[in-house]
Image 1 (cartoon, rainbow over the protein chains, first blue to last red):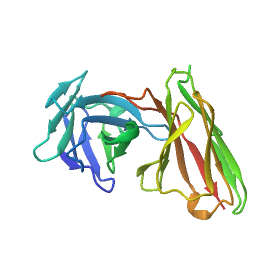
Image 2: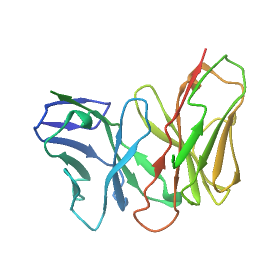
Image 3: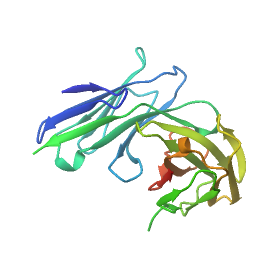
Image 4: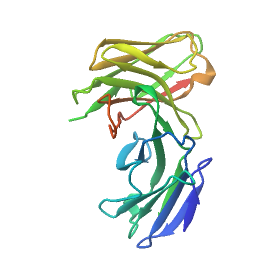
Length: 112
Length: 114
């Protein structure tokens, strides 16, 4: 399933399925992008990052895809597990001060 | 070991009071931040300090005053608290400069103004 990361939409997937979370970013000058995972009652945790000179990066069970033409970022989670249930944020870095600008977040719910 | 630690985790206080949230990082980073997360989970930068100097100050009321005694600490003091200040406040840190410098977050401080 897919979801657009605006206004905290919810993506519900079955355990074992793949998840795709999408994000539209705003600044064409952004040169670095990060996906964060935020579990209930905790702070955002780094998952994976990608620089603007790449279009794909893979981690363990996660892949980030970057399409600069349409300013779109996606996070793919393979074989989604109950522990993946959380709110996922994309963030872009641009401008002075190493500042990260966050997208609105997507809640991922994994059904056992 | 907690890399970015902030206290208190929960704070309930009355309107008009003054309160502080403390933050410390043991990552050796030179840049620290305060972010505010509202009830809709939207995360917004408030302040950024690099080597104890303010480098980002987004549109935040003057009632909010950050203080950085050294580069490992960034405290947030809030005067005359209002109902709308109720939110989760996250401290974060990173190493400034270059591409790809990940920002690490604390566990958050839940502020409720009644």
